[in-house]
Amino acid sequence: MTSPSRPKPRYDVVVVGAGIIGLSTALFLRERGLSVAVLDKGVPAYEQSSRNWGWMRTVGQDMAELELALQSRPLWRRWAAEGDFGFRPCGLVSLAETEAEWSALQAWFAQARGRGLDTRELDSEAVARALPQLRRHQAGGLFAPGDAGIEPDQAMRFLERKVRDAGAALFAGTAVRHIDISGGRATGVETETGPVAADAVVIAAGAWSRWLSATAGIVIPQLKVVASVLRTTPVEDGPLPNVASTAFCLRRRRDGGYTVARRNSSLTYVTPDALRFLRLYLPNYLKQKQLLRVRAGASFFRELWLERRFGPGRPNPFEEFRACDPAADSDTLKATFARLQQDMPVFRAARIAAAWAGTIDVLPDALPILSSVARHPGLFLATGFSAHGFGIGPAAGKLMAEIVTGEAGASSRAPFRLERFHLNGD
Image (tube, rainbow, N blue to C red):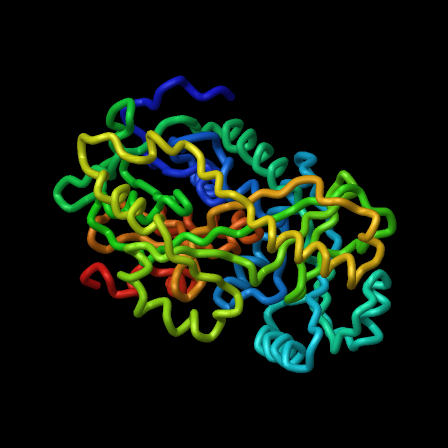
């Protein structure tokens, strides 16, 4: 199905953002018979949804997200039966090089037991059997055979087609200037091409959700983090499962190369929002500061200038910045690849074929917001997935659709409510 060139005057639901969360939400809303328009300022899924590692994982998920991860497994498998996007049920091995890391993995596993996991513990000898390419001794590991690898760019093209075929209207290059509020209720959006009315508006705009929500007077304590990734040339006899460790993380690609990254290499900048929300972020940062690097610079003044440009009836940065293309951190990627070649000599003949970076939307507790907005009935938020959104995207979109239609139970909604931050008079 081909979408019209411009949105109709009214839909049941307008979804802002055509990434994994926005498209999944639209799909499950269409399954409920609602008319849906998905609006994106640029190319659908051009930003983080197609730049991630391509993991569908359960190991290491926060307990509040673990159910979404488990529910996403059959959805990804069902979609893989409908189209080819490189879905590979290869499993995931999470490594623990030191005894401290091994204790942390075991503590997570003890907490996660009884939730329907297929995960099992590996001692050092079992790790060596699972990853014969690995030369560095490991204290232990966890293996989840039901976890999988996916080609994210191909998966997003599949999902885009699936959403269109389901009857949702998808509009690329259509920036939303602000959320329309009338009588305290969200009644639609103002786009660069004109107004679009709706009974419900879902903001699923990733790293841009913070500013868009602010046009309705809603505060989200969301910051942006930049993470870098590389892909290698083909590697013969490389590891088959996805591998997670503090030194490197990798996924075998369908072209025979590997997607490689390091989970403790994310970069964030001191911005006005970083200072505003410092109190909320500081406790988690102090516990996990080895996972994030903070830099000061001109970005503070650039963001201050940009945020002042939002407002009804005015063009805003969404119309000027159609795509977010941060530069990759080449030094970190080279160091990560060198460590991979040291630990797995099978990679020594490989080369770095490409590198890229993505901008990730994060929240203080690293859990997303999947929530209605109490102050403005009809307004809903699906954002802040903190680098976990791709793998759990299908189930998160399903839950978001249930929240919009009032089907979601209180227990499934509770961990993800906006009100947990107490920033909007709630």
